[in-house]
Image (cartoon, rainbow, N blue to C red; front, side):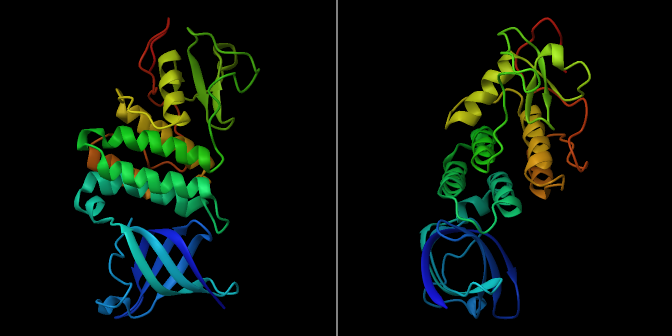
Length: 274
């Protein structure tokens, strides 16, 4: 058994007994870990304050490789998750990032995933309330890319030809990107035009304050792509929660991408984007 101290963010916790809790944290050095925090529900113990969902800090734990649950020692708070918990929209948006990591990140550490997760939570907490969804789309796509599933927007995922500035293609979830008009004849994915590709590309490539003109379509596209690639067709409850809070009629019931979804685009090019 070794003692390890690592930067960490608390993603989820469960009561285990009258005095203990099981914590799920994503850490910089250990990846996703489960921790048994004995006696933590008594409160007031040293290094046990600030353990609220989405709190960031330095976790010290006793690690034994043969155990599924490691043993909690202390947590030194750097950034509280209390602000996210006080606002239901921010909490719902943060839950999307957390669930993406919980269902896919695994125990292998990834500094890039850790950076995207912690930065995303901080940005959601600091954003104006009417900008929360736009920040989530930006951070959500960057997190998906950090997990290894960046969609291909150009060239066409089928023929490899570059898409023209006027091309209206379709998103092919199975192939992981956009098909040009010639290759999209038999594909039922959402239409995506040049404006949508440009907007989505900006969201994926780096932090941006780009406004989201069609939040429902963007959330639907992010949901369907992550369900197909990240969660192995398992429904993510956080998307349903966020759609309900934001009052967006997003289909989160299917165990895979639905057909005929609304485009994430903002422009029209010869045809109507539906």
